Image (cartoon, rainbow, N blue to C red; front, side, top):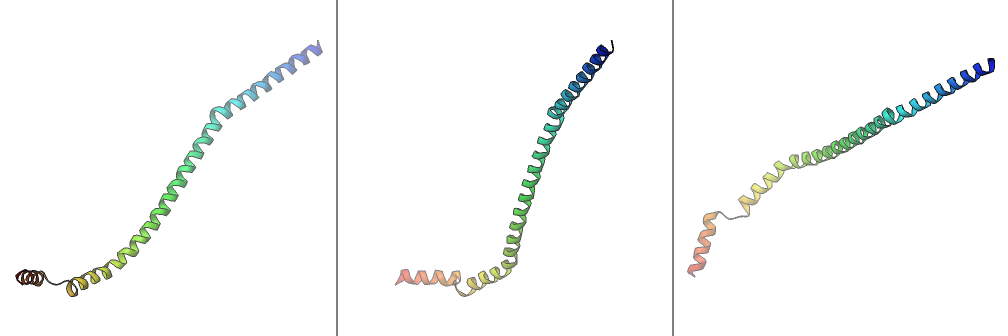
Length: 101
């Protein structure tokens, strides 16, 4: 009888071991793996956002340089308009005199 009790105990322990392994596999595929995939997705999304932020910071830097140069550009345009382009009245008179001749 002692041997059969040991066999019964061994079979119960083996069954419990198999159940624990099955639960472990179930937990791995049901919980751990999907969470790992979600974490990887979130990490990729965060990395994309960081890249977007870096790109936008570079763009902001370039735009700030343009903004700092704008007053000088405006002065150059005013100088060009005042010194290089004849006033509208003079331009019209020169056209009229050209047609008359």
